[in-house]
Image (cartoon, rainbow, N blue to C red; front, side, top):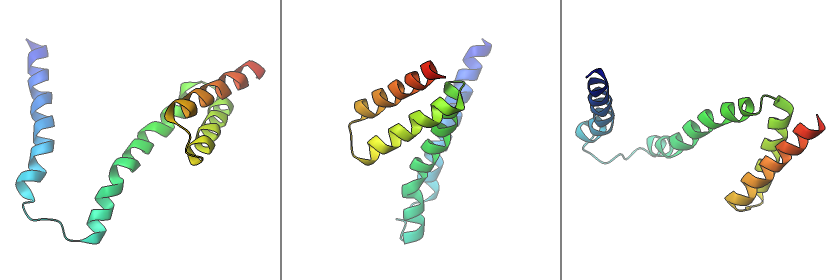
Amino acid sequence: MRLVIYLVLMAGVTYLIRMIPFALFTKKIESRFIKSFLYYVPYAVLSAMTFPAIFYSTGNTLSATIGTIVALILAYFNCSLTTVALSAAVAVLVVLFIV
């Protein structure tokens, strides 16, 4: 019974978080600053959640750093997501075998 209460409470909170902005902000946002701020929020949140997980995932900061550098370089050169992920993982494995 407790699980059902928790699920209903989580569903309600999730619904309210999504519904309140629609109910409060009925006019279109005209400010360029607010528009640009809201445009970049998902990228900032994603990177804030991803980067700590990257550096704590291997247990070795050196291998995580090398894997991140490899991934950033390949992403800069517009490689596919599969290529970036596999190359970063291989770089981490190579560093872990060397160290």
